[in-house]
Length: 267
Image 1 (cartoon, rainbow, N blue to C red):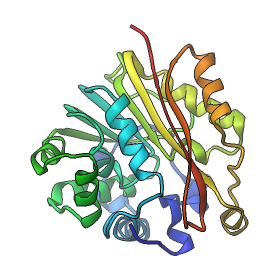
Image 2: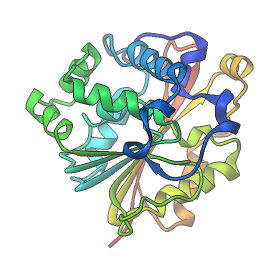
Image 3: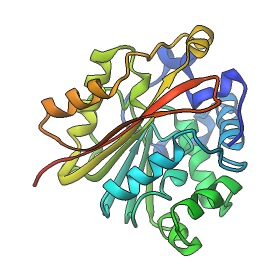
């Protein structure tokens, strides 16, 4: 996964946040003529720059895939929050999901993800990740052919997917919660995700900690993130700790570390 210009880091359209429509909608109900061409181009570039070339080691990707594999169970229903264009990549770590719900605030991100998922492409970093997880091509194609749906809403606040009142067997939150402005916002978003775990389900996430340079350049300071914060949020909700690790990132000027974590909800 190669580096991108600063404006493409993270796949987050920060400048458009105040104008974003935060109502729950299904991507299928949003007309193509209402999607912004510049946003589609942005996420196409993000996909090509980050999830196309060979997988770069020591960036935390290995640990995230392993956490999904080791702690994600075998989910009949998997929901991926703040999906951007990455859900298919993270599916390499998920054990045989039957239904996939990809969610993001930006419909254009989900449109690009949907088109890529349906394209049949397998970029080099996907091949590398499959080898890392000892997954076969058939094991990758099975979730790709599973039932996918795309949902537009604000993952950082309380949410529900209509018709899914029982919750999800696996809720993944890869990079999303670190967009919260402060610890209180992080806990609000963590609780919203946890409230949608089915009985016996799993919550698996990763929070990238930005470098001082990236904070100065882009403005969002999430250096409040820590294993203590995440474990505290889970403990207050009665979740069982499965893993919480701070993984140092090597050679990336934008991120210092990523916290990889997993919790479960009892029956």
